[in-house]
Amino acid sequence: RRNQTGSSLFENAQTLEALSKQGNPLEFISKMIDFEIFRPILESKLQIAERKSNAGRRPIDPVLMFKVMFVQRLYGLSDEQAEYQIKDRTSFRDFIGCTVDDVPDARTIWKYREELTRCGAYDELFKQFYAHLQSLGLIVNEGKIIDASFVVSPRQRNTRDEKQTIKKGEGDSLWNDNPHKKCHKDIDARWTKKGGDTFYGYKNHAKVCRKTKLIMGYDTTSASVHDSKRGAELVDENDAVGEVFWLDAGYVGTEEGFVSKSVTPVICEKGFRGRP
Figure 1: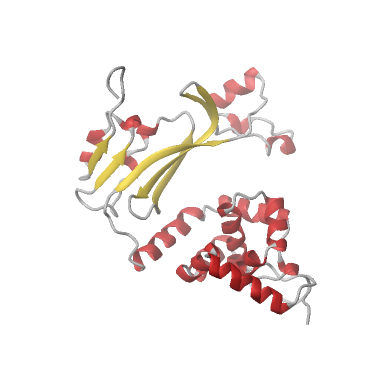
Figure 2: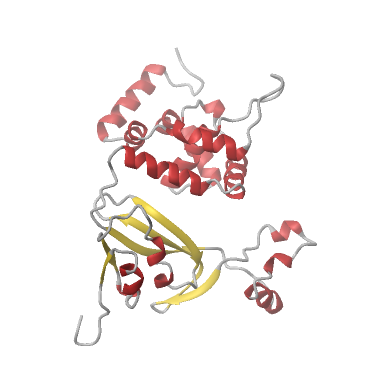
């Protein structure tokens, strides 16, 4: 028997077995995380209503779509590439739980991601994931690392007056007469310079478990916000009293913020000529 892709079912089984022997990361993730734990949040945030009839195409399962986004982020795929790669790769479809005919198209992936952003679901999904890690005993409180990284955005082509309006925090008033143009404009990204290089976009502030490298907390700002402005703010009630926080030289001078929250900062000193 051959399936819809033209390959035999036996051949697909052999492919999955070979991937498993080589250490398929998606198989490991499936064993560690039951993605059904996210269903209540996804359904409540997306306000999925019960179907009144069987007419038309059935809505795509929200957990399946969340897995699609997970694969897309894990492998750094665009919406178009996510659609193509899921159709092409047996391991992706096996992880997501779909057939070739069920793979959502690029526009559906984009709309789903935009809707999750609009309804503010990501923070609740992260909290649910954190609670799941705790239940597995993966939160060890043996030290954390805080660091920030740039997220580059496409550079804007705005007039001088438009730039001034955006800097004043009034960017949302621009381009209302041209909604197609406005949807391509980014009024939150900012410019900054580091080590002689110029960046435009955002900054990801992350708190990571020193032992497992799992992300324990995060914050997002424009690129112009200095790392030190968000360091101590990532310390919360889940961190143990006296726990050591490892920080690079960008956090020099922020020690008091950490000490006031009953954790111990260990900050790399800045290097100078003759003193690394």
